[in-house]
Amino acid sequence: MTLPLDGLLVVAMEQAVSAPYGTRQLADLGARVIKVERPDGGDFARHFDSYANGTGAHFAWANRNKQSLTLDAKAPEGRRVLDTLLSRADVFVQNLAPGAASRLGLGGAQLLAAHPGLIVCEISGYGTGGPYDDRKAYDLLIQAESGLTAITGSLAEPIKPGISVADIAAGMYAFSSVLSALLGRHRTGTGCVLEVSMLDAMADWMGYPLVVSKHGSTPDLASGMSHPAIAPYDAYPSADGRLVAVSVQNDREWVKLATAVLRRPELAADPRYATNQARVAHRAEIDALLGKAIGGLDAGAAVQLLHRSGIGCSVVNEVAEVVEHPQLVTRQRWLTVDAPAGPVAVPLAPPVSSAWRTPAGPVPALGEHTDAILGELGYDDVAIRRLHDEGVV
Image 1 (tube, rainbow, N blue to C red):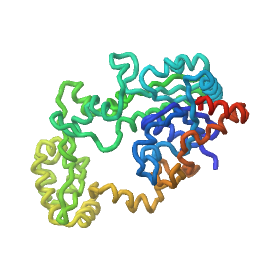
Image 2: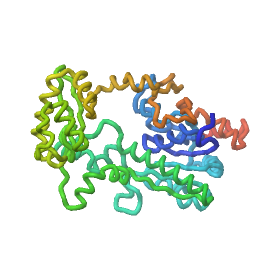
Image 3: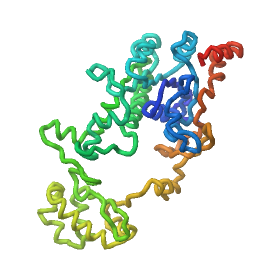
Image 4: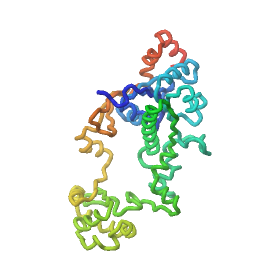
């Protein structure tokens, strides 16, 4: 099986989630990703927990299909090893602390001058050229800084979404940007420097409330699972205590809801509800009508009625229910890979391709591939042992 990125070499000095998640996408597509880690513990996400059968859950999720090279890049011999790797690499990805890459001589402009064909992807919290350049940034901080926690909750009670949204957004932009740069290099023969800021990523994802605010209005804040600009759009209790989520996206769907679910066909053309803006203005009335209709049915019956009527709906699942979700299970959207403490199951990312399958490559142990990679670079057994003894690797 040939994968789309077979033969591509990616060198990553990465930690936590954003960069590892981005390079895992490249690894899943066949790129050889060499993860350069500190000898004294490596990527700190290795040690967040041990929930994935003894391996850290974040680490298991974001680091399959990679190789681990331990290396002290500050040591002269360690830097020589890194330079040799970079001379062979197609892509270099890093999310080191602000300024660290430049101090190591690994800034984008520095690397591009030495390796004109290299694609350098720098992931940071705030980007460069502004007053926040030197600030440390973690997912929580960027979620707060970007306003996400305020619109998920409120300023009085901000709520952080339960996953690393800012990290994941930055990782996905890094992935798509690297793919775009590879296409560009194919045409021009030259590499480039890509700067991916977590704050930029979240500002883009915050499009609706930011655009509303930029143009002089105050965006309404969603309450619970509602949407500030769409109605009905919320979760409603059913007779058996489960929540049923309902989304009506256009006026045609409203007609179906009023007729087949609410059984109030006269409401279909009622000027209070006939358009989305009108429904938003009368949200409380619609929520009461829909809440009464769903509240008289078990969740399964409510979903069946809504679906049969052409209305988008779902139940609100607990995490354990998603693990066994029939759609994921039937479509085999779990991948089991080896990991340092034993096999782990991880969800498969899109796409489902007719041309390739995601390889089930292992999650690497710290430094697992160090000796093999050094051997490829021309180091013999004696030299490799010396590097270990000196703490370089």
